[in-house]
Image (cartoon, rainbow, N blue to C red; front, side):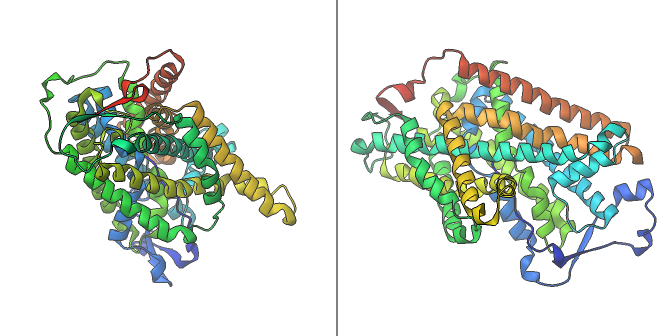
Length: 479
């Protein structure tokens, strides 16, 4: 799912120490493979995080718009196959996160570095590869990771444009019929408003102004408020879908083979929080506790994903839409859920955009003199927001843009690269055949998801398809 790459502001406050000093000069293959990095905080303890704070950040980095699209994902897989697949994908995703942490720790231990990010880890992994070509082209490891990070973060921003437009459009169209009664089924006559793409264009100037805030500290209060509103919205959604569940006997246990790649793209979009893993581990007061935090946090995330996807599909059945918020009743309580969640997504846009901006803007400003740096900075940010808006206008279907982002970039960062990285890192140190086989299989699964997920999504975009009934008519059925 969507994540925010944290900048390490206190690398100087970390120093590396070994668990056993006798191992310092004994870099044997077996010992290096099993060693665990330890940090000692020398000063400014306030800059470090406890295990609970790290757990909260981990949950925040993995829960976003992808959670709301999982009921449709379960529909694309089937009421039985969908939850089972989410369990398997959760296990694989957390294993790949753990692989990334172990490889990063290995290079920190080897080179006595306080911290390496995702791109550095892949670059050092290629430098350790047995292939001479990979060693001489190791810088491309960092560039590839940077490319996919930019693609992922800007993809999130595209999703946010479509999400806000769809939800605000529905609130506006149902405004004249909105009541205080949320308990009965009823058909509400919607008042047609402008196209959702016009809503995206209406959001554009406000989002441009938002990303002009280059210091995220100025957004800290709004970010906290956005997190609280999104948390409250998710709780209200769970309360609603957990009641009055219809007979599920008419739902398909296993969906069609053609629809399953759409499930994969949405699911891996939701699970893609791997970019935040290394910064969170580095910020911990006791980094060797991170593995426990990782497994506990991702177990909670997986349980939320399975419950939201399953309950949402059970409650709304085949009428489920690209975001479960679009299926909520037409009463003021649940209309406020759409508004509050849209506000949270609006603020989160700046946080997700920050990652891509931190990679692209310095490259652009380095080409000009100091007097033009601020101007080029703001122009670059404006152009990037306009690009994300243009892509959202071109692909105004929330389900397909989520699947496309998940299939293309999330699968590469979360499933394809980490297993290959483990092979590159430890192959010369006696990596077992079972580990190599396991890593190859995970990467193959990720690659197949990348290929078929992208193909099916593009086919759905290009092939003539009848418009969903909820988006093309003036009637909206509240269940």
